[in-house]
Length: 196
Image (cartoon, rainbow, N blue to C red; front, side, top):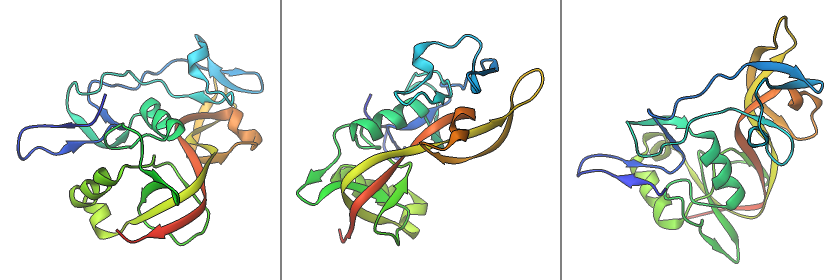
């Protein structure tokens, strides 16, 4: 589903935004394979790297948009398929790379949970989002590489593992087996900040 615009005066709802109808389910977390899993785990609960993902219902456009809350499946889909985080269509790409709208940047190579954008949506997002109006950077990156995940890190507990801290972990970190992921992190390589 693409982003939606309501009647005049209603805000644009980005593709990755969660809706009030999309509640997070709370399956039983168990110790499994030197990490965590779900008691009723299915193949859809893990990504191609074997990381466990949070479960959330998917019903975009139903209920009220929950601005500031990102839907895990749509975020991961947008990052993996290089779709615009606002409209859900292919992100802007040219000879300099793929377009990303970030809160700000100082580094040559960056990590982010933000999916890329298309040019029209980047301009719209800067006008519509108060935090982006204060500070943002438009970046073109030649390469984006899955770097890790952001979510809830668990620790061993009895009778079941316990949520411990939130944050991000890189793939290859042995603690990632104890993570319930909510967002995919990518590293942007060969990034160049551009002026709109």
